Image (cartoon, rainbow, N blue to C red; front, side):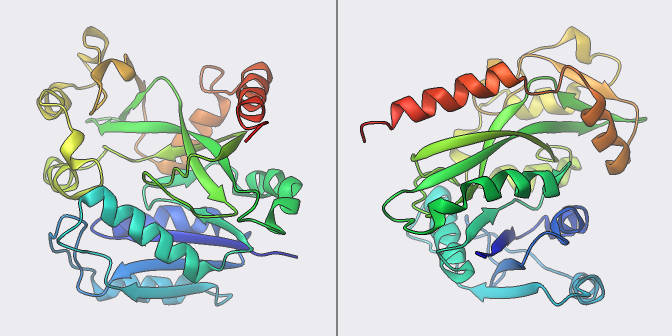
Length: 287
């Protein structure tokens, strides 16, 4: 059987992998951690990975599934997004085309990875000639926005994310612009829920750095659990994309996962999924 290959891009937020890796460890055949040899971000910034993290990897990797992949992923002549796409393609080549290639960011935590793999296995036939029949498998994200004194603010609408592919012909981030099959699986996305210093560094160095709108960071700093209902338009690129925030009275990742799993508002309906997948099938029918 073809392998389930999981890859993470490791950078300044590497410590979040302590949440992400355990969610996928059991079902993955191999987990690849791509790290720049010179500890450079896509914008040329520097980061440090403490020895304690590698010790944690050693202790966690009881089945010897984790492989460290170091290379030069930063190129000064490229944009941050070009560097990201380049690294993702290099990582996928390392993971081995002909397998399921699943790229997850360090701040993305599956609610049920085993169920996602069960869905993925329905499409194993696409692994036979991947270059002739490229496809992507999508899920949905619940974005964690900002920690407060007693809990966390989150974005009330789910957004799609493309995680798995049989052929990594990436164009923008993880998007290859091939046909997508959506599943109803959800991940927590600790995208913006950082300290102010950590978030400022991320905004400067990630693949979207030139797209950030001017009002975003001030709004992020001012919103809290007392005033979030009085504010709107929270997205970092096109503000109105994230119209409103909700609140979870916990800072525990496990409790957040249970909150999202039991929330009727954060569910993907069968009719919505059917519509999305029919649209994708029809769009690529004659291509």
